[in-house]
Image (cartoon, rainbow over all chains, first blue to last red):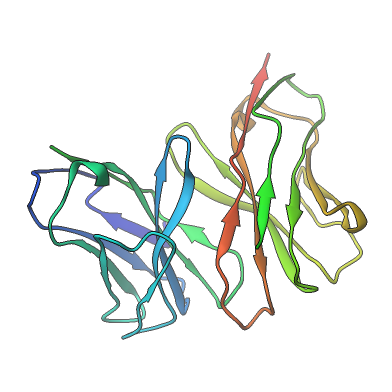
Length: 111
Length: 117
């Protein structure tokens, strides 16, 4: 069974709307990450977390918030979605600094 | 600042042959970790193999192996007996620091591999 799952897998949102992307992992990993992947930019780190209750800013945090209510769950929140946030979003988990295991991705389109 | 460079944009090989994908990295840290990931056509990103900088022996997992040349800051991925299913984009990545500390994973731009019959 998949150890990192994301929901929804596809999302269409309107400009100015609120979007929440969810991630769940059953690896019992302490670290979790949110990335976005765009053509020409590769994978870019948005937010990450060391454990329940912690969130840290990555390289491109503007316009995004994160929430880690438990070891298993890590959410990415777009309070006011913009078309520039149209992308594919990946969640990942890792045990400390070890290899990261990725979820299947969420394709977000902001109209 | 750390940097990872994959100069091969795309490679095409015949099935059942061996392919090597190049990756060079830059780091000021004496301790670092190198990873290779595969992204399939469906978008799935899969961890393949890892090399810790302090280990002299090249890592091997299944038909994946690494050519770690520390003096050249190079970590090549070797796939032997390639299969059609190996067609994907391969990313090299590096993380600095000790295993229990956090630092971000820096990715290369990827190499697209096409395995043809």
